[in-house]
Length: 121
Ligand SMILES: [Zn+2]
Image (cartoon, rainbow, N blue to C red):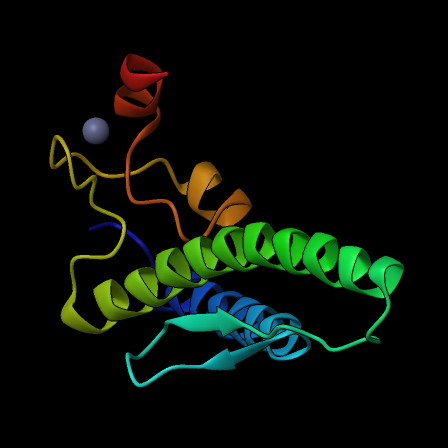
């Protein structure tokens, strides 16, 4: 991989910041489970009448969708950090080519190069 140490450090800082942002966001409405990186949306009790119950269910459904989305991002960020540690960071997981540096700076958790991304898209 042709990333300079400086780029690598900068990307690591971005990834760590993104990771704590996602964890903070998740902790607002979800609890950690025993499985690392897995969260469970909380069911918030608002009240006992029918309107309250409807709101609770609605909110829970929203939280579940959001939790899934944030958890997916968190998994990508954690994966990128793990690849930084094991030295495979910046290499496309699909074709093995170097991922474009511009892409890594725009999207530090990228695990595929632009070519593979376009093929799938
Ligand atoms: Zn590729």
